[in-house]
Image (cartoon, rainbow, N blue to C red; front, side):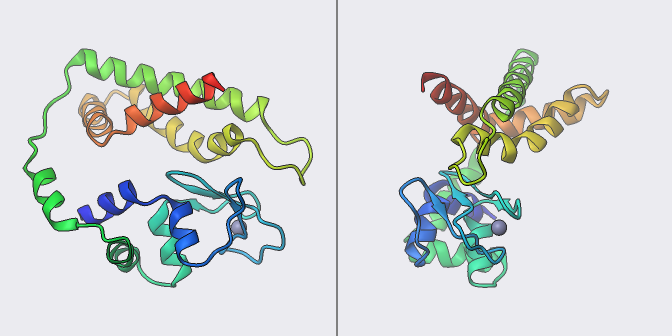
Length: 192
Ligand SMILES: [Zn+2]
């Protein structure tokens, strides 16, 4: 299944859209391919896309799967081949990496970052909401719309009694680089 991870890590939705002939504005806006879109309402970012009209969102593989009306697996294979992503060697080394249990401190850190990020997104969603529908939406608003439901669902896990689930989640977030990405997003946004 690492063809998914490798293609997502290597190709942004914007790169794929441009490669397959979609016209993308310098701001990253394009005509949505999930609904009949007269004005560009789909925002293409580094890791995901989001449509402000039909609210469809997803990653580079979802985008290409829709573009060619094919399965996510076929879309991943297409991307890997068109962008010369080597799935096999990396797959091996990733699978060889042993899974390490996060320490209780790491777990706490993990959830405090998630909670910070949730708060941050809630603020952005209010503070940067577009006032004019014709206006290009702020990046932070886009991110908040896209990420908030997911992040809130992760934070909820922390308040559930299931310790094992918390541990698994912390482990996954630490290992797949999600936490690092979240920290980067918060830092970038604060520097702006
Ligand atoms: Zn749409």
